[in-house]
Image (cartoon, protein in one colour):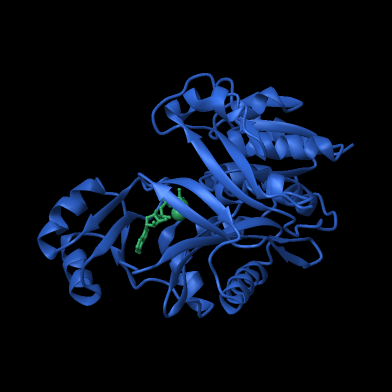
Length: 351
Ligand code: ATP
Ligand code: MG
Ligand code: MG
């Protein structure tokens, strides 16, 4: 069978690897860290840094297609890999989504609603942007931010200096604060022939900047649901995308506002493991392997809850719960803020 190469060996890489294995593929993980969670389930692991061109070459040679679980892969590494075979989703999807400024410019070009934003390079550009956008606003680093890291809220213009210092010189964008009622996300997939399949939107609650729960169905009207799916398809088609993409949305009285996109399987799509016949991980593997997309119809109501740090102490109780599926990532040490596992509670099982 074919071998799928996965850049990144965290929990997403692990669950991709399990799904690939279920479809009869072999998987090969590339990760700089020792004992990555995906390494326990993959057929092969390369432990090397992204600057190690010899290791990258050998990895690229050993696999039939390369995909990834995170968006911050260095360009030079991608050059090496791409000279040996396809990367799915494409480099263009990576290039756009690994930088908030290019991402927002792209989303704007599709006429999607996004928060007002400005490129921030220094105190003067921040002052000008705050005069334009107003407060409250959020300053975010253009690259490498996740789980709310690399962000500073600005409630009034006198907090500008402090926020700028928090960016530590990293290129940033200022975003106007969106007054949303709740947050939802669409997990969308596009196959190699251009077919699109979207999962039912999930409603997301964050705690300390980290996703806490995703609930399906989300509180959305029929037309909001339709809007969410159509805008996700617009993004997929514009990128000629192959694979699964996460689209985070703010629900406002004026309509849906796009927060950010992620060119990969997404934490807010973990509910699909117990809510659909074909989950986001299998869907992604099908797409990057050139297979037809599978049935992503939701058959149950689900609440996904992330288990972070010492949430793991609750495992013995959770293990006894009815209609509760455990998904552990095999991480040795439970540190504060570290995603260790999640549970999917089926709240209305199909009869
Ligand atoms: P992720 O882990 O999802 O990649 P991230 O670090 O990229 O997160 P964002 O998604 O940009 O961060 O922001 C984290 C959360 O902060 C959002 O889910 C939302 O709750 C809040 N937030 C971000 N931007 C805005 C905004 N412009 N207006 C209001 N709230 C916002
Ligand atoms: Mg993000
Ligand atoms: Mg986010």
